[in-house]
Image (cartoon, rainbow, N blue to C red; front, side):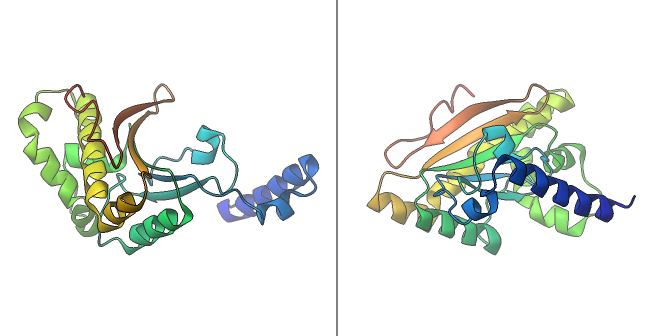
Length: 206
């Protein structure tokens, strides 16, 4: 069976399962919960965010890109951020993860992939800034450490955006959270956090 045929069959099985548990499932989707979280994660982390967080449709707005980067010229991200702020989300989570392809490409050195190299240019620069520390570590530890550094960097970039600064002038939310998802253990750890009234926490320790 071809992949597309299998997927179409799976969608039918999904619908049958949902309706068997709740006849009003489709109707209820029209009345989705107000989103409280914007989750920015890596596109190659294939774990369902709703499944991990055990949340209902509409509770979390999810945006994915390679290595969970914050870039002001990414119109998709900026529009998603604008929409999330307008919806009144209380938290914006940047979640990096182990086994991230983008992180690994930077650590190992990528092939001549023009667009990938352009997308990851700031991450490559971050690696070079910390090369003395990173290059003393085994590769798996290099990847983890670079991911941690990147999560912190993305939170800082978020905090400096006009849309965040202007929102913080009006209200205390959203809080910015930097999380690390360890796929080997299935656990998520908060590394950094920032609010309108606080600076990054735990930076020195991490």
